[in-house]
Every structure is written in structure tokens, then in C-alpha cells.
Length: 115
Image (cartoon, rainbow, N blue to C red):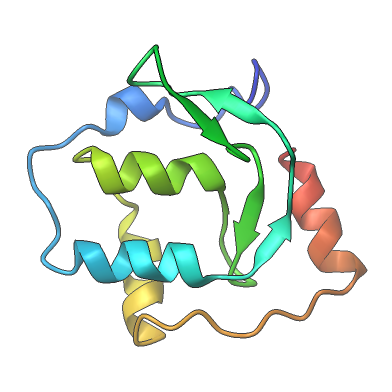
């Protein structure tokens, strides 16, 4: 997903699971409803389906604490992937509603760190 950057991150292929969370749909809604942090006008290759592309896939979204790529939402919605427990607890603690984000320089610096 990061074109050979961020080798410290686990591979998405290693997160495939057989167990779907009971609030999976609510978590996907949370990811979709968080404010866009950094929009990228491109399409990226789908990592699981070679003939598909995801528009704006490398765009970054955030709830002010966590940062995720736009294409990761599609992967989580379509594939049984493990979601980090700390993130799931964070989403549940926010009652599945992304908080407003203070979009200062520190926020954008953190987003661009992964781009």
C-alpha cells in the first residue's frame, strides 16, 4: 500500500481472519464518516482483486488519533480482516461517531508522515 515505505507495518495479507466483529458495520461507518485528512486524486490497484482499482485509495482520513488510508475502508468492508483492538476500543468509546478534528499544522504533519 505504501510503495515499499513503512516496512515496519504488518502486511495486510497477514491480517486475514475468519472472525467478523459483531459491530463490523458500525466500525466501517465510523471509518467512512471521519473527516478527510488529505485527498489524493488517483486510483490505486486493489490488493486482493487484480482487475479492480480504488479511486482516491491513498487518500488519508483521521479521527484526530488514528490515521487510515481510504482504500483500507474498502478492504475492511469486503474482506474478513483483523482490526487492531486498540482502534476498535477507541471507536466504541466514541459511540461509533468520529469526533471533530483540530486541523492544525501538527495534524497535517502527522498525516504527511505516512504519505
